[in-house]
Image 1 (cartoon, helix red, strand yellow):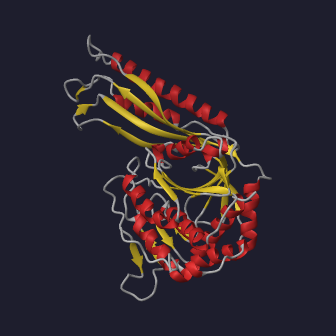
Image 2 (tube, one colour; image 1 turned 180 degrees about the vertical axis):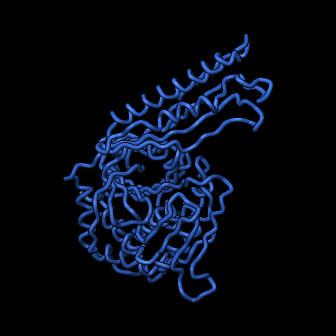
Image 3 (tube, helix red, strand yellow; image 1 turned 135 degrees about the vertical axis):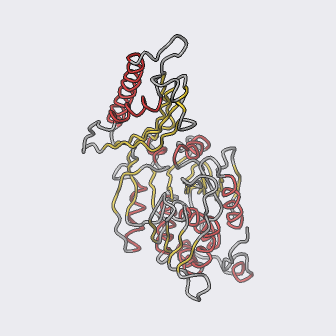
Amino acid sequence: MAHAAISGSGTAAAQARPPATDEARLERALGWFERNAEAVTAQHIRITEVPAPPFEERLRAAAVRRLLEGAGLKLRTDELHNVIGERPGRDSRNVVILSAHLDTVFPAGTDTRVRRDPPAATTRPPQRLSAPGITDNGAGLAALVAVARAMHEARIRTHYTVVFAANVGEEGEGNLRGMRKLMETYQGRVRAVIALDGASVDHVTTMGLGSKRLEVTVSGPGGHSWSDFGMPNPIHALSRGLARFVTTRVPEEPRTTFNVGEIVGGTSVNSIPFSASCKVDLRSTSEEEIGKLETALRQSVEIGVMEENDAARDRRALRPGNGTLQWKMTVLGVRPAGELPGGSFLLEAVRAADKQLGLRSRAERSSTDANIPLSMGIPAVSIGAGGRGGGAHSLGEWYEPAGRETGLKRVLLTLVRAAEK
């Protein structure tokens, strides 16, 4: 991967500068974002165009590591393909983690080429960039690299060691495995976590939304649609159960949701399937309500299977050896809830950065990598990386780099304050 040109990197002029005060170094780092705005966008595009399907983040991890190599970090890649770069502080024992997730929701084979509007042939910089994953989380990864480079070029030193992490497994069934591994790696040493996710600077995620993802599988003997008509059908049973489950009433407060996001089964139109399955997402601000929904799903599927077996008996289709339907439920992932206390030093760091930059952000609840440290009592937030984006998780996802510098400055100011005493 070719690297975009970044100003000031390793030049004789930079090396000849006299020692600066901490304040002057910080100002130099903040100015770096404006001087290198086009280069950051170019790197953002390159990152986005490297596919990172769920559980297949290796190629993008390697690309991001190459971009971080010029930032003066102690770099390594762990067994999950988390890319980890340490910038030592005066206190090397305790760390502040700045992270951005590598993975997207899009399957292998998705076209990730970035489209520009206006086209690249014009002399104006692109106003809008479109590609799957360009905001979630191409924007966060580009910011991770940019902040690391800015701190290196400005020679910023912090009290606590700063860990720059491009982590796997945030989306879908990844179950936040990358962040879980980071918490294990730095167990007992993590002072705070700042997760970069998306673009918006209008909010800061301080509350982790709990969720549980389940897979229900119904299986049976299968058969021919004509000669074996009346035998219990896994798709019919699953349909009966889901039709019952989706009528479950959920409270408005605490807010609770459910979604049947995927159904698969069968081999041909003229075959009674031997298996059918679905994947269900349960979310709530209350762990108790998630438990209630899981119970409702279990009961609904059990009734659906029972009704389908009873219907087969009524049709006298359950001959010896034919068998009845069986079902099972598998937990695909659990995202624990958590909340940052209102008086936390990390939230104060975000608010101070907002005040300095003239921003006004609101606290929100969401499901992000911050869920894991928050559930462990570790201060954590998730914030946007600047610019504007939309259409997340769709093929029409887009990003506008105008104003990105403000978001990058917000990240840097928050990080530096969090990494001080």
